[in-house]
Length: 198
Image 1 (cartoon, rainbow, N blue to C red):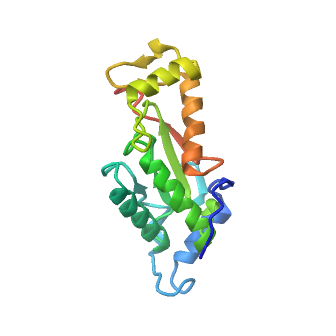
Image 2 (cartoon, rainbow, N blue to C red; image 1 turned 135 degrees about the vertical axis):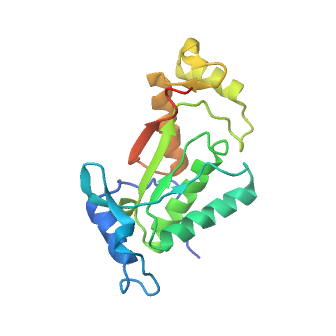
């Protein structure tokens, strides 16, 4: 049985060396049974040194249920172990925080059990919406109250209709909470979630 150290966050970020290792692992001959076309991997904007899969795993869809947690966990595991996907995208409001928690679990297992280390994967999340918490059954209204009273986010900076907020105190708090749920010390990209639309 493999024991996972939940208290130690995964260190680092996607690196040229790590993503190259993932790329080499995906090519025929490195791992038996894997044969991913070399053009499946590209550089990212100005950083041509990173080798990222041209498609990624998104975590938006699904119900906030154990069943969908299980399916998402297996989908990410299968995709990453296929050698064809090393880009994972999530957000706190996807499935009411459950997507980030599920991603955190599989990232930890991939690192501890399958030697797919943090530097091989490109992980992104977002900040902008006050999320609900399906596990703890905390509504958006309760979360807004917490943001105002405990975090110091000005109430007028939260859009009441959508629960959207881009105040720096909110984004800093959300980033810290995202990293906890993902069991990471660092993200590769942190998007502002729908800054214009919301």
